[in-house]
Image (cartoon, rainbow, N blue to C red; front, side):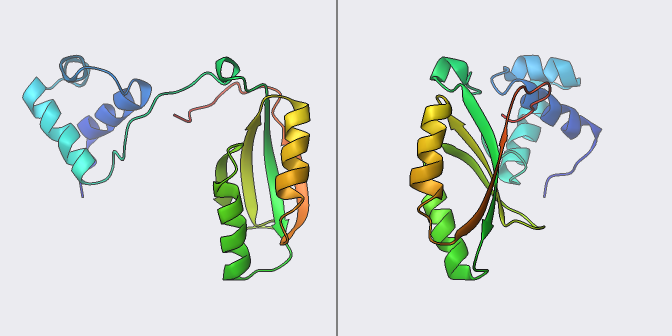
Length: 150
């Protein structure tokens, strides 16, 4: 396990803001030599603290104009029902996040579609045909003043 000192926290903060930052620039920002900074980043990667790097995409540029969070309740609380639901959501390209949660529902989904018409199709053809789904509550995203997902 990598140590979580102040410098490592600063490295993680800078990489979270810009995963493409050069090691030289990162080292300058956190106050280390480039070689010491690289060693720390590699140790954070080996320890599994840093699990990957990705591009942050503009949904509108990708044709996504309709984003929802959906609460889903299942009628059965078995491993089989959960596994079947999770398989169905894994194969649905509209579902960009699927979380098994506690509370009055079993799942929280983040769904991204082109528009209301395509969302209705997803709602009817994917969620509506799942044999274990008994409750669907949709929350339409109207804006995201803070979104730190990367």
